[in-house]
Length: 162
Image (cartoon, rainbow, N blue to C red; front, side, top):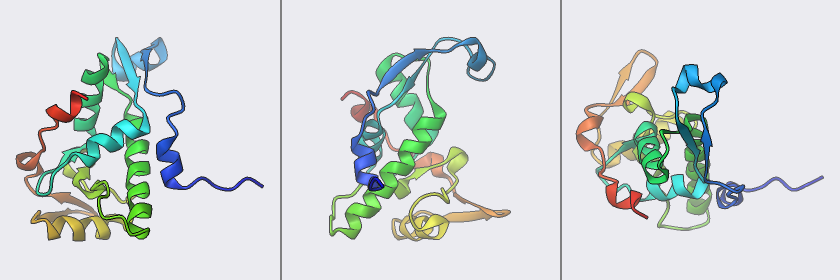
């Protein structure tokens, strides 16, 4: 039986990505017309790593930067979200191994500033790290959001030029 890959190994395996693909008929009703980029996992990690303390980003913000970087209409929402999770899990592995300069995955939020329950430590782990950096997390029903997250969005324009 094959050994299961670590999250770090998954992050480092680009699978021939990034790749820009034409939006076909099947996808056009959802995504419109044009092209979409399937980013490489390390590209998503690179953008997440560039977010300074006190600042935040969202998956959609990352997608905008990735699309612009590759001259595509949009960035794939599915793979961008998956690769954000891979980056988060790889950072948790690195932290467990004693690394100190890890990707600050807790600063990457879902749409609308929502915390991501799929990140290491779940919503509570992300909340603790965000609280420690001075962000206010509020509850809306059963979901958690960073209050006024829009005011703390990181300017990742320099990271998008790489």
